[in-house]
Length: 302
Image (cartoon, rainbow, N blue to C red; front, top):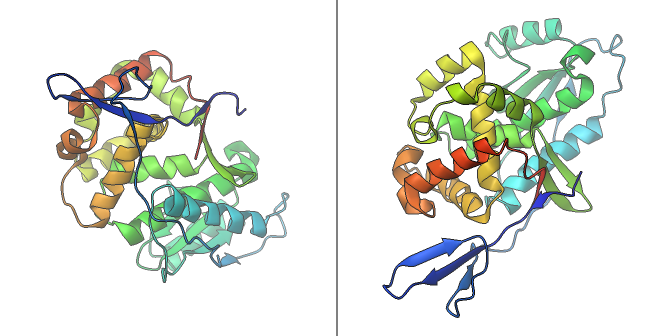
């Protein structure tokens, strides 16, 4: 599984005319230098994640691994701490309500969380800083789908606490990455999201232009996504493609930090400042990756 792993660097050089250039491969120019993101050492410590099992679990065939849930959610927090460079000191971690089936889940979110929840696998409720998820049946993917949904919703909880004005597509795109987040021998990995890839490739001729995608208003994005689900899949694949390259990862990091500071601009207007080659390169890189069938990388290591 880990044979096609992305962990690139960025190199910078200045040509004879004083123009600055960037590449993800070293050049033979003497002035070329490796570009690093300057960070402070992480003070990450695992958080105490409260998992509350609500309702009657007697009919649940598969064993619910509460320790696995706590590890998974801690890995999501660790990702934002060590990869995206956010500090969770004195932050109150999200609480998780786990329900045994969809019927009890819907009753719970409607009565306790005052949310409909009928088209969801799980929900994060900002006002409560709590997540509700039910145990998915085998048709939905079983416990692995349940764990993935918890990681997805944990990402929403984290980003809400850090930057609640973030564009919807970026918020959802980051949450999609957490669905495949794993930890192996101390390293964090994000794997290719096969469902998102399949949907994007199936609808490739109808996908929104990447630049236009970054300009869609949140309410319109969500309305259109309810119809087909393609916005969710494209957001996930776009963020995955960005994280697979150091210059794309740098863009994502800078965007999240900007929104954390309260910047109130759509991503479209920040690309020339934060992305190597600006808006046009951003669009071209997406189109090129889409044409390759999104086959690489299979895994991104952090």
